[in-house]
Amino acid sequence: MIKELADFGKRIRLDTNNIEDSLCLETIEILIEISSDGCFKNVYTSEKESFIEDVLRTEDKGRTIAIVPRLLVDNSQYVLGFPNDKKRANECLQKFKDKINLYSDLEELAPVIKFYENKESGLNKAYEAFNLKFKKKELSERGNIAFYLENADSFIHENKAVYDAIKRKYIKDENDRNSSETIPCTICGKTDYRSKNIAVHGVIKKVPDGHTAGCSLISYNADAFESYFFRGNDNSTICTHCIKNYIVGLNWLMINGQFKQNEKDKKPKWIPTNRQNFGSDTSMIYWTREKESLDELNLLDNPVVGQVSNLIDSVVKAKNNETKSIKSNQFYSCTLSGAAARIAIRDWIEISLEDYKRNIAQWFKDIAIQNDGKLKYSRIYFLAQSGHNTKLENDPTFSRIANHLWKTALLNNYMPPLWILSSVLKRIRYIESVEAGKKRRDPLTLERASLIRLIINRNNSKNGIMMKEQLDTTNVGIAYMFGRIFAVQVAIQRAAIGKNINAGIREVFFSSASTNPAPAFGRIMRLTQRHLTKLKQEDSGAFSVLDRKLQELCRPINPSDFPSIFSLEEQGQFALGYYHQKQKDYEDYKEHQNIKLKSTTEED
Image (cartoon, rainbow, N blue to C red; front, top):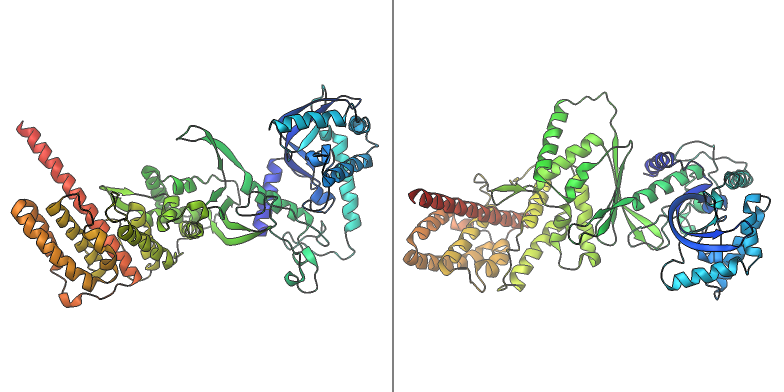
């Protein structure tokens, strides 16, 4: 995984011209304009990206606790000593000035040196102007501040002489730090760069549920994590160049994105390009070995029927024209979470791009469900949220389900755990029992039916009953048949009593009928007979249709075969039988109404 991240980071660095290990690409949020004699002119906001000193490489120190200034560019603590009533801020400012003085032989730095020497016209004025705008919330104390010489075309730190000086010092310090014993890097296998005595690797930003300052992927801070007499990060023996690569790559995957207009409030919303977030504690990042668009992943969030059909067709054609002599591009996915100041890797997926497309096409086949006479595909987000009852941002169950579904979508042979099925069924039974009598839609929604079908089929892929996306008259499994019977019994009650039922058969008996059918169906059958008697007197046509349908479903079942309990998988089959029968009855009703309307129109 680290090797693939390092290779990806190398590609990103080449694309952004970020090829120097001693420099890093960051955004300059604030610029201080000064004159050639160091006088303060103004302070502005900025959004320009620029290469600055990478102190994690040049100084080989972390900045969380230690005071490690960057040359010419840093936050308000270092550049201005803000706020000046804090001891650490004053120490940061002094260290920042000391670092600039180390490069005092560069004439390009003369204006900045004068800025700090002539406090009244330089530093103090800048501090006052910054403080004023900070109080107005126009500036942030954490943003990167750079110096800008009036009438110049670039920041002072972007001068070639400054960059060259940083590079020279880095090379000299690396040679001094390098030990006589050279160990090959475990990633690239080379000895071109130092791989021993590396204090820090760097931090990853925007890790969910992680430290705000960033999290480390590789870090050793206690004897318990060390082995074979290696100390600290020597336990990983990754060279400084590969470290830089994987840090750049992983940060790009976590941070990169673009603004898109929100359809609801028309406001711009930040959309990550290579990351999926599920809950507050889990992120799935993904990329390819060679640059390639991954439009198929967009379908997981927005499954347009036509595009899904095109994907399935293209996979079938590609399989027919498959050429094994051509080396395939690779798809990678990593699931991670924050664990205090560290990153916890939850999952790692590595497959060919052909398998990636084939598996997503299979995912849509597995989650397809008939609804209102059409095949429907649910969003992976809605599938994940269909098995819990708390706020998404605080629900660990949501992110756990989402993680398993993400893996199921990308790996055709992956079987999601059965506890997800249990969670969905519990949610359905909870709504039926607790919210009985309230006006609401059936808790067995399209998303829940789709998720139930997916879990049953993936866990029965080698043997067992496979559930279809629509009513399956060939499926004579006892649980599926009981679900169909239960749907007809619900329809009979509705036809006999009407829509305004406070707590009908479905609300009262769904839970017991789907778990302990023998005792439940004895009571339901008695109720159904009463409803049929009432219906026969009031609507003989409806009685005839529903009674015949019930008899046809019950005919193959021997009363002695009534099971006393359903297994977890059978409970899911019961739910799907109920859902499929309900959908088929609704389609038949609509068709009947259309025929009736058509005949009436023709008579007129």
